Image (cartoon, rainbow, N blue to C red; front, side, top):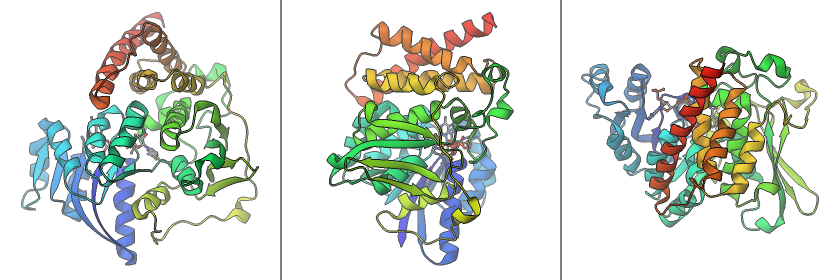
Length: 397
Ligand SMILES: NC(=O)c1ccc[n+]([C@@H]2O[C@H](COP(=O)([O-])OP(=O)(O)OC[C@H]3O[C@@H](n4cnc5c(N)ncnc54)[C@H](OP(=O)(O)O)[C@@H]3O)[C@@H](O)[C@H]2O)c1
């Protein structure tokens, strides 16, 4: 297999796993890669190291003020360097067979949107862009002759067991959730948890923002919205079950009573490999599942009282229009405020609820013409509202 790839967000958890997987596959002699573009943010050292290894045609940092640092780090390499938002778009537009969209948050929307318009296969980790622009993003990729392949382990699982030619055979989708680090933490203690505890996920190693999302279960809410758009499923046919071992990554229940599940060790390289080689399979030195050693798999219902973000996401999906964008923006603002110690953990859901309340009920979620520009405008509006609410809650604390 030979693929010409770009990795947007190459310095993050998913981006680094993508490059590590490519490296392992090349060493195993099962694939070869040419890299068109790599992008990163503030981690110049990691970006330069990746660029020296892969020799992309273009390497970009999102931050113009860090361009000279990147140039210094790559001095003598001959690798072209650029910086800033337009350079990110340029990287996304470079001809490639496969583009990994792994920037975190709505910051990844414009580049994901650009990548989807190229006709390439987009490996989508940046769930926030699907949440904000779902149907339009899917349509854009199809119209351009490409497609969106999910990289989130849950959606990769569903993608692998979903009857793409006969979706009418599906009764419901079941997303599994690890339950995060606070699955068994009493409500009273949740009020006092720190960012350090929130990012210490029991099964997965991830970036800070998604780790907080996992702890609040807002991540599962975003994934519910993501699943609705990817698989054309209404909210009332998507359920969540907590499965602490993270071995079953999600399931499709069929109308005849069958349920198909996809399993694997909790390692992001496996769903990345699936998207990278689809519809083929990439052979790499993957960790293997030893069910006998594991002994048992367990399941439980999510607790709607301690984790209200899941219900809020469902309500946003049901409300439609810009509500998922508002949910996402409020969550990003609140998660960041929690990481900065400006907001208590339990107030993350409170910020989401109040932002939705103020904006959806006052009609500020009204529809827009250009999906990407409209989502960005609505996102900016929702952020202003959420920031105000974070300030009010901080004053009240
Ligand atoms: N981590 C996982 O296991 C996992 C699983 C499923 C889905 N996802 C999704 O994948 C996406 C990435 O998650 P992650 O955990 O890999 O995040 P991460 O480790 O925080 O990495 C984020 C990447 O985005 C870059 N970035 C940050 N702010 C940016 C900006 N304003 N403009 C351009 N680039 C920017 C970062 O650059 P610097 O670090 O250099 O600043 C880094 O390359 C998220 O949407 C997440 O929900 C992650």
